[in-house]
Amino acid sequence: MTPAGSLLIATSLHKTYGHTPALDGADFSIHPGEVVAVMGPSGSGKSTLLHCLAGIVKPDSGSVHYNGRELTTLSDAERSGLRRGEFGFVFQFGQLVPELSCVENVALPLRLNGTKRKEAEDRASAWMERLEVADVAHKRPGEVSGGQGQRVAVARSLVTGPRVLFADEPTGALDSLNGERVMELLTEAARESRTAVVLVTHEARVAAYSDREVVVRDGKARDMAGVR
Ligand SMILES: Nc1ncnc2c1ncn2[C@@H]1O[C@H](COP(=O)(O)OP(=O)(O)OP(=O)(O)O)[C@@H](O)[C@H]1O
Ligand SMILES: [Mg+2]
Image 1 (cartoon, rainbow, N blue to C red):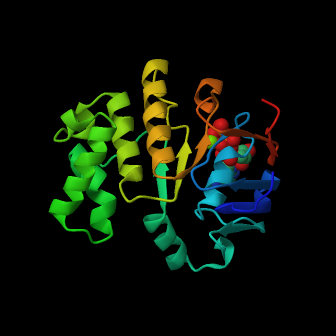
Image 2: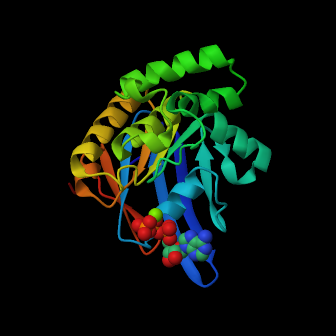
Image 3: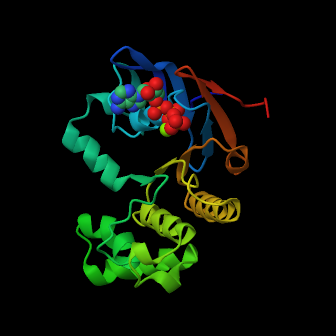
């Protein structure tokens, strides 16, 4: 696959924790609007790859280009600016703020970027409607189901209009029916807004929502284009 037109390109990433090589020459690239599933056994380096791509973890060597900029050379402030402004995140357990209502959780990234409360909550409400969780807007995360909580987390990840959504096992804690609904809504919203999605998953059923699969094994990433 050619990286031309790619939004995010990682080349030859190496990352070692103590004596454990988590990444051992991993390459990766993704286009705007593309959904790429990152698969592979437990401990193979999937999360480490995602964290390097998102500028959360600095690789020991190798490069990560985002939109023409080399992430590894940016300052911490510049990288956290990118994460707030252009990247969205969803994890296995929604990681919602328990003290805030669901709509306040979804509005939070906008509030942190300086958007006024009313506008932030209006935009949050629109996203909650899309994710079919408008009815839990005023509940706390502790009062909603796992599937509802994950849809709230997806709404929160998309509310700022990110160019890349990083999702690490977003349906890992859900039953299959809820998992599939979350994936349907997530991929539909991402494709419509041309958001690239880096989707880490163990499950073939979840990967089926992607355009392309990359398999990570022993810290090396292999593109499965044409294999499926
Ligand atoms: N912060 C860390 N400190 C030490 N070792 C780590 C750290 N993060 C990851 N590792 C090690 O790096 C390797 C890759 O871990 P990683 O979390 O990327 O795997 P993974 O593919 O996401 O696994 P899983 O499917 O279980 O989430 C593993 O051997 C892991 O133990
Ligand atoms: Mg992981």
